[in-house]
Amino acid sequence: MSRESDIKRLAQAEALENLSRKIPNSELVTVYWSETTETHRHGIYCALIPESNLEQSRQDFSWDFSHGDGLPGASIHWVDDKEIATYYRYGHTRGVEPLIIDRIFNGMRPDYQEISEEFRHFHRLYHEQRDNKFYKIDDGGTEHLVAIIEPDRIQIRVKEIRQFLAIKEMHLAIFFDYVEYSRLGLDEFELAERINERNGDSECWCLSYGDSHGMCGFHAFSRLCGKRFIAPVPKEKSGMWGFAEKEQDQYADFIIGSDDNGDGIIHTSDPAKLANNFGANKGAPNYLTAVHFRKSVLDKYYNLPGKFSVEDSYLRCGSLWGLQMDNHHGDKVCAWLGDLGRDLPYEEQLHWRSHNIEPVGEVSDVYFKRQIMAVATDSEQPEHIFKSEYSDLLRTSSSALGWRILLPLTEGDKHHLKSLRIPASDEQCDFDGLTLALTKILVDSLNEKQLNKFIPNEDRGVIKGSISRLEKALDECGVTGYQEHVGFLRKLQNLRSTGVAHRKGSKYEKIAEEFGIENKNLSAVFEEILVKAAAVLRFLKETISMGDLSHG
Image 1 (tube, rainbow, N blue to C red):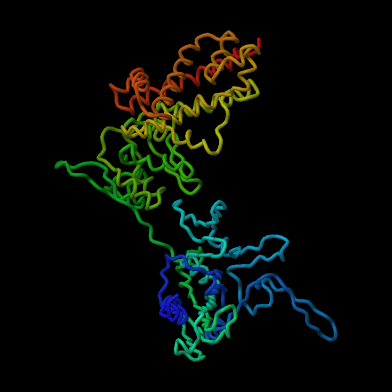
Image 2: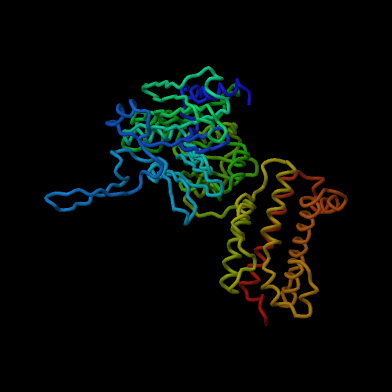
């Protein structure tokens, strides 16, 4: 290294510059770090300092808390020659508490660091064990990255640290100890052994220079040791119920009609400002005013099936929130104005607002009967019918046969069923993805092992493929009328094989012609495919329920 770079390192310029920098709430700040190289040894640790200890801690650059501290411990004292043991939750640390805890197993098991359980529970953090990251899920279902644990570093977002500190009535002290080495001597830097110190409200540190006397080939060294303090936010900003101030509810405006000039009429979705059948807010739009949206409003939710569930007349985000909706149209989705304001988080209201259109027509008959007439009514939408038939088939086969003719989808494949629908767009990528999903559900999931039991031994090794096994099993059982359904499954499999799994060529063009892809938009084609797929499920369900699929 050059003399100039060594001077900069020994002066700890980068570390001192970082100390003077204001840390934004959105930043993931390092609260644990350990790194040793040929020329330096860096370490960071941290602890929670009670308000009563804060001034004393600010005057002393030495660490208040050491690695290995913070575990339960006890002390012993004597009263009238009687030994008395006292238990301490975090050991005898004078009120200082850990945020990061060293787990040390003396070589019997690998050591590691963990984040305080109280902190994790305070923010209800989800631990994604695959990459050792921690997420906070807000009331709207949005995930926020709060902490990352790496082998030699732990980072936590400042916002969540300060909220925790507010309730604890503590400050976080981030301890640091940086040692830099140089093969050059102090005299070559024109440096003498000396000490620089600083004590302030936000940091205190000591920078010292010294002579290593040739140890490991090094002569000059510098050491920067101290701590930086992170203050709490006011308790009303802690986000904790009972302490936090109530946030003002926000409501998006939606188009609910058009005036005589053709301009859209817009009104708030705030339920408190809507009329109802009990005389509230006379002259205002009724709570049950239908608001219309492009069908693509649901694509966001279909594309995140691990988080959202789009069901017959209902959209849900886990158990956090849900919205009743009219998804029984081919080209739009409707919802009541009051429900949009009452049931959707504001961020989701804005998403729906971006897909809002002027009303065209009314809500569907199915939705009207369910919502207004309180009459149980079956959906007429192909994707709803398919999913209903799929569930019925699984139940029927399990009950009548003792096994499922369609194997349950694995965790990694369940999204194919949840995201199955008639696409809102005419995009080839959507059509291909849905074709792949449907084939996995109907063809790849056929229970070949159980179907083999209906097939003579001499034929089992000859017949290839799940569809052919289904066909042979039905034929051996004397089932009639299966040819149309088996033929559809083969066409669907060919559509997947020639157009999704491989490059599209002449074979795809041939099967595409059979499905009418050249003459219709892809949404209409897939709607027809779903109708035929539901018919396959219904046929199998009826065949099994009548006892026709048996060994005779």
